[in-house]
Length: 257
Figure 1 (cartoon, rainbow, N blue to C red):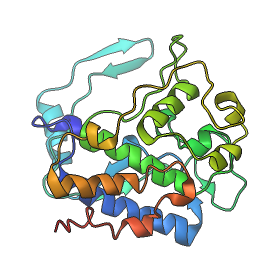
Figure 2: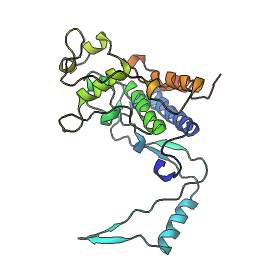
Figure 3: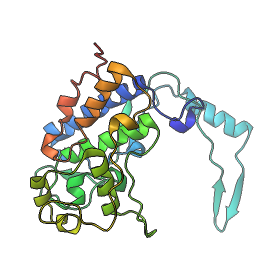
Figure 4: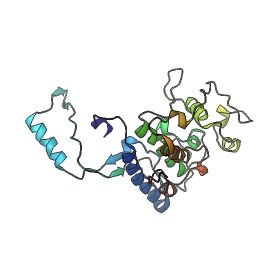
């Protein structure tokens, strides 16, 4: 949807709020009623419902009047993609793709979530549950609203994603994790010594903060947004707010006093 809007490359504050209301409602239902963890929340798994089907009629007519270029590749025909028109009206966001979902009361320790959305308890190989979805949403918000990824994990050796680089970025942004939290992770000795100090072979970047990185808000509105973000991006999973609690957040409900 962002790619279809020629005027901006990110969500507006109003659109972000509307999307998050629906997303937290979905997660509250999954976590509270169904006891299910989604584990794979990303922009590609939040779909917009098309209420006005004239956009589909327009697509068909455009294709009939000006057929898309195509080529034959062995036994298949490959077409150039044609974009839909911008759907009129406010369509409802839908949480999709439950192929990686897990039961909340299971002994979950596998890698879960897109690499750069991965929660710290997943990276350190400890048992995880519903709060991984909340962490995922926090990182997703930054992509949608700030137009850039909050964390990165590119290995300096050029080998792709690296957990140690990702963790180093977390420390630069959130500060060091609590010692008791570190002790819970099976992989913690790879990155921290017995005193909880970082000893992996990549440096921790210069300290920064969400407030320094956020560029689209000012004053009370920015303060409330940052509090909202911090309530999700916590090292300790039990410290993160639940989906139900986040539905009452002042920034999400535009209670700017």
